[in-house]
View 1 (cartoon, one colour):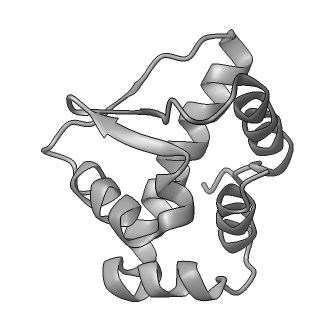
View 2 (spheres, rainbow, N blue to C red; view 1 turned 180 degrees about the horizontal axis):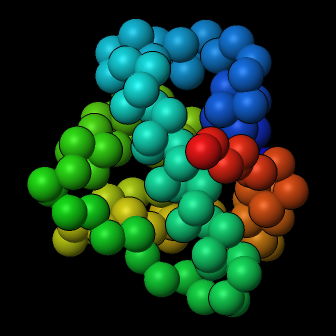
Amino acid sequence: MNTAIGELLDYFNGEEPSPALAKVVDALGQKNVRVISIELFSWLKRQQRFGHEKPLELKQQYTWCQELPLMLDQWQALSKLFVIDSGRCVFSESVPSAERDRIRSLVMERYQPVLRT
């Protein structure tokens, strides 16, 4: 399995970033990487929960939507998984269905955001 999602989950859950992810964090900032991660993970969880591969719509009024393409440009491992097509983030056609299922399952298992009140 591609390790980019695992590295992103580790970082989101409080671990130090991998060298490749550290470069992205330096370029985009910790907050932007965290927000992009939340959006990606939430999208992948919805796919798993509802059994569809609906694209992630990128609305340019949101900073994270502007930053996601930059993140993909700077992190080759992640750009092998996802592409931006017509203002939407989708799985790359080169990612087999079984790999997509493993990625979604991993996110379902490891992305458990804490509700802050």
